Structures are given as C-alpha cells and as structure tokens.
Amino acid sequence: MSQLLAVLWSEHRSIAAVLHALLYLVNDRRSGGKALDAQAIRAILHYLDVFPERVHHPKEERFLFAALRHRTSEIDPVLDALMRDHAGGEGAIRSLEQLLLGSEQGGEDEFEALAAASERYVKDYHEHMRTEEEVVMKVARMVLTETDWLQLRTEWASHRDPLAGIDHRSVNDRMIARIVELAAPPIGLRSAD
Image (tube, rainbow, N blue to C red):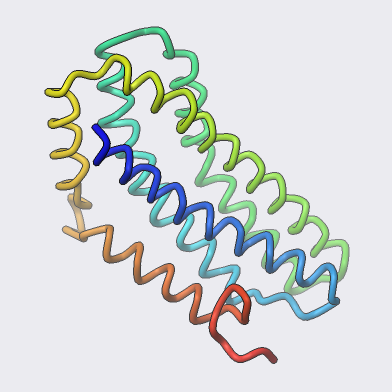
C-alpha cells in the first residue's frame, strides 16, 4: 500500500512544484513589471499537458479509482467530481496557452487575463490534489486489500504509453529539467536578463 501512495504523493509534489513555478512567473511579472517569461510558461504548460493530463490522471482513473469503485460506492460522487476535473484539464491548458499568446501580443489587459486564469487554475488544481490525498487515499487505505495494492503497484509501475512505448518517469524528469533550464532564478537556472 505505502509504495503506491508514495508514488502518488511524489507525482503530486512534482505537479505542485510546477504549479508554484507558474504562479511565481506570473507574480514576478506583476510585481516587478519584468517581461513575461513566456518560454518558461510554455514549458510549464507543456509539462502539465503531457504528464498530469496524459499519464497521471488516466492512471488514477484506470487503476486506483476503478479499484475503489470495485470495493465501495461510498466515494463515487467524489470520484465522479475528480473525473470531471480530469476531463476539463486539457481545455483549461488550451485556454492558458491562448491567454499566453494574447499576453505576448497584447498589453496589460491581456496579461491580467492570463494572470487571473493562472491563479484560478492553480487554486483549483491544489484543491483537486487535496481531495485525492485527504479523501481518496484515506478511503483507499481502508477498503483496498493487499491483493488490490499488489495489482495496483504492478499496473501503475508498468504503465507505458501504448502508442509511443515511452517510460513516462524519464519524460517527466526531462520536462521538469527543461523548466528549470528555461526559467530564471529562483525557479530555474537561466541567467537573469
């Protein structure tokens, strides 16, 4: 049990760090009047699209949520709400990408729209992860059997993109490294302009 939950927590911490970077870049632009670091924000949005949307959420739904639904209906409404969040994730990222483009081409109003949407996105995402950690994981600890946990660990660890055959752990690491490379301190390593 603890191994899979540790993996989930670790993936959530990676996502939370990237969300923090997004807010930091937006707030840095707001407070200092600096140019928007659009390249770093694009890398962040790419990460959010590729890892959480295409790997993390499908694994949660396909394996953990399905196992929970097999054992109990107690949290079906919570799981349904989380799946609706997952379903809206790609659209939210496309919206942020469009707002970023508008901000690059426009003025302060366009940037403020991007900033407000980024803040909402991050707030909602943190609430989503909190629900998974405080509700879903709690119920999972109570109702899933050792056999369930063994099957979940095996399925979770062996999950690869069936079309590309990619090990998503290494892709995730490379995308986070790219964000660090592109962003200026304290988020990243690029020399400050």
